Image (cartoon, rainbow, N blue to C red; front, top):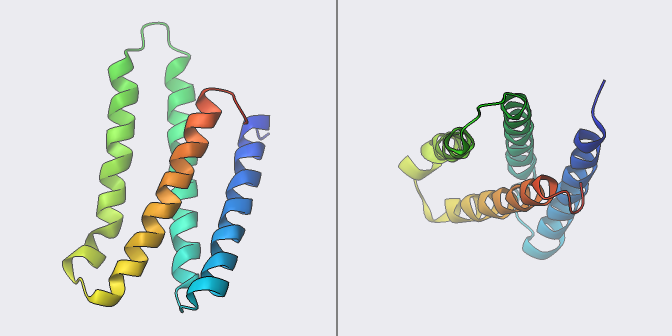
Length: 121
């Protein structure tokens, strides 16, 4: 069964995704809506896996804070690998894809911070 915090995270992620899609459609009028959806699904799954790993490791008594740092660095490296095909074949039109990715990445980073501090989630 899903934990209450995972359900809240899912709801906030869904709302953030919808807001991002609507704003992109109304303000930017670009054809990248499916790409934005793919970015959000990727980052949401990455956030869930990260939360699961952190929760599993925090149950151990002798967990070092360096492990949590390594998980976050690993998440950043996975994001770089996700963007690598766009970065390698960079064209001027790809800058919007990268902007959308970083907007979504920081959104999920803020959600992660808020859920870690138990402020909202």
